[in-house]
Image (cartoon, rainbow, N blue to C red):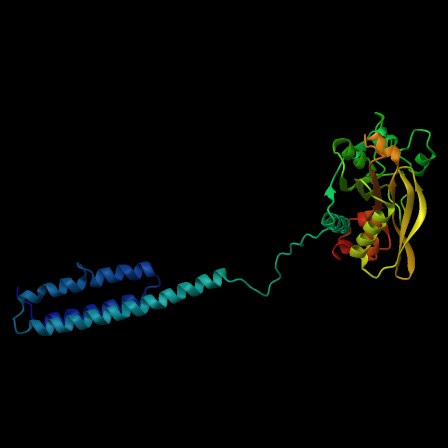
Length: 334
């Protein structure tokens, strides 16, 4: 069967119109790819139409070839344009589905902060470690020996009345100070000794604005040959200067503690009034004997203070109970 030039031109024109209409109406990329293969693929409709070239006169073939190329280029242009449009619509739809509204409030996760008690302990420890002291710790449940007797406070000593103690059914007690750590450390270590002992303590105090049944205390101890009260004063003054400031007036007042002799209390002038901040003294020879140190060779000094008192002064807190209230309005200030 002979195929005429006009017949092939009509087929190519009809193919072009049909393909352009199909491309224009498709709405997804997979279907668009199917149309490309159906019209322009190796076995597509354009190839089938061009299969009739061999039945044309040789003079007419270049004309049909040029027309076929024009149809192919037109369809390819439409395919590319449609692909770009569909890809753009696909991206817009994805952006609309995944868009974040940056003006919306984020999920709030409060940042953790150090409690004023912990920050005060860390600050004191940093100061004394810088002065060459070693951190030491001991148990909160103690024996009568470590809490009282080894600290020159026998059973009938009136100083025991100064500390209303929590006694346990097994005969032990909750330590009333961290001085017991000094005894345990000296029993296991030979002089020279320089330690700082922070920890929780317990006393049967009536809870009010300045007292708590559970509180934190820090004690320091130094034992070596030739230590004097002058060394104690110098250490305390350096600590107070680093803690509160160089220009803070300080005074030492004579006092009494069973495990130090002589003993003193230290006041600082804070905001126009004298404030007691710590107790101190030279280690009593009986305490040195209790741990096997020779008081004829070694001397030492010790000092202790309440962490809560320092935290209240540093942060201008008016009531010790605020430190244990777990009130977020209070804690967020630090």
